[in-house]
Image (cartoon, rainbow, N blue to C red):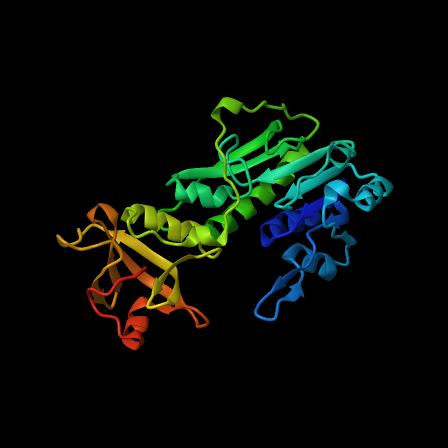
Length: 311
């Protein structure tokens, strides 16, 4: 098939690769504009644009595709059989959705109608889900409400973070996409049960701030959900610390301990008092403008002692 591919982050790379390996023709890639990155705020291309350059595939980067006549004209000129959308990051107008012969397919990283929206993987982890999956559905004008063509369920591993889960889902999604396209003329369209819908709104940087009055299991889920971005974080003596890895432990905090208080420091990590008398073990962290390190290594250089507090 002749395909226009819409995508931006690395999540879309396995699908793009599988489409090419399956013999489909990627006539055009639509991706997000370059964004400022790093201390110097230098404009950087997203992973899908980098792939387009490496593969010598034509690409276009509309600022707002809903108002971009050039994007529509380019796709009309191509006359694609299908649009494929994988984590593109903008709402696509109906004039583009329904232009190809087979309309537009979206690879979504949840079992719709659960977790519609921009951050399904993060919200699955925040909610403590034990299972998630991939949905291939036909795009329409509403957010993640189109007819389902294929779904596949996956288990979430107990200590898995968002980056690890996204990697597995991206591979599974690519395989399911190829399977869907191969059977696209035969597949039954399944309407979503909108009464069962849940939502996964976009995550912001400030959502990563740890509230130590929350339970240890809530904090554990937050750290897993926000690794690598936006990262769960806390403060120690005005030093911002990203928490990369940790876990709730069964041992209860001693009576009289307060939320955020450092209880014990061991080679395994730093034990912190949480809400409901729980305890969380910080195993790996990253001070601002420094490299990631074991929590115990940070303790050795930062003059931390029991009864100090994270804020």
